[in-house]
Length: 62
Image (tube, rainbow, N blue to C red; front, top):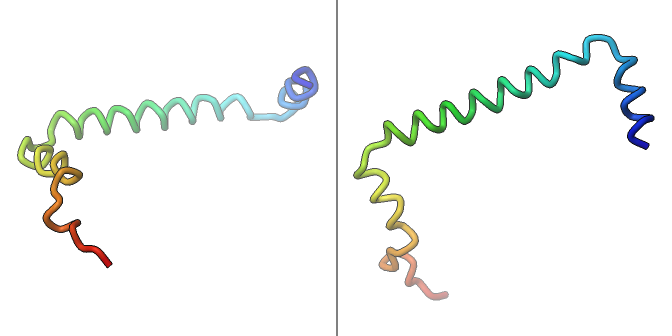
């Protein structure tokens, strides 16, 4: 089965660009995510991390 897929992929012209495009997208996403984590304000991180523990707004019972 793998030989069939590999043979079929080799016959497609221009297919060698797709792995490069996916690598660039993957790398860019994680670089941007890493940059956002480093530049995020500590107050925002603390506020968001305490949301699951804040029961004052979630104590509404139907």
